[in-house]
Length: 171
Image (cartoon, rainbow, N blue to C red; front, side, top):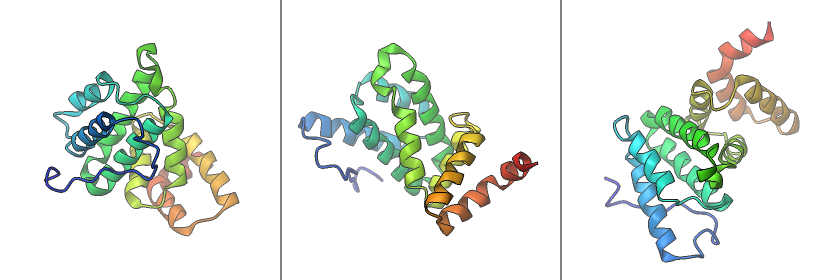
C-alpha cells in the first residue's frame, strides 16, 4: 500500500541538506513506521536505533512528524506508536543512544503545540497509559495553555479523553 503512494514528510528545508543517503534512510524509516504492528514493533524499534538515523534535534523532530502522520493514517496503531515512543525514551537513557536524549522533551513540546486532532489527543492518552508522561504534567500543561490561548476544539478533545482523571484528581 505505501510502496505505491510514498510521501516523505518534511516542512524543514534544511532537514536533509546533508545527503541523499539521509533522505533514503528517512524514507525507509517512514515506510517501516507506517507498517508497524504488534508483531514487528521490536524490529521497528531496533531498526530505528541500530541504524543511527537520528543524530540531532532536527532528526528527532522529523521522526516525531512521521509518527504523528502515522497516527492520522493508521489510527488503530496509535497505542503501538505510543509504546514505540516509550521504548525510544527508555533507550535514550543509554549513553550509546545519547542522540535521543531530547526525544521526550521535543515530543511533548511538539505534541502540545499541535494537539488539535482527535488522533493526536488519543496518542497523548496512550502515552500516559504507557507511563511516558503522567497525568499531572498533562493537566498542568493544559491549564497553562488554556490561560494563554483558549482553544475549544483542543479542550473538547482533552475533556473527552481525560474526564475521569480530571474528576478523580479534582477531589
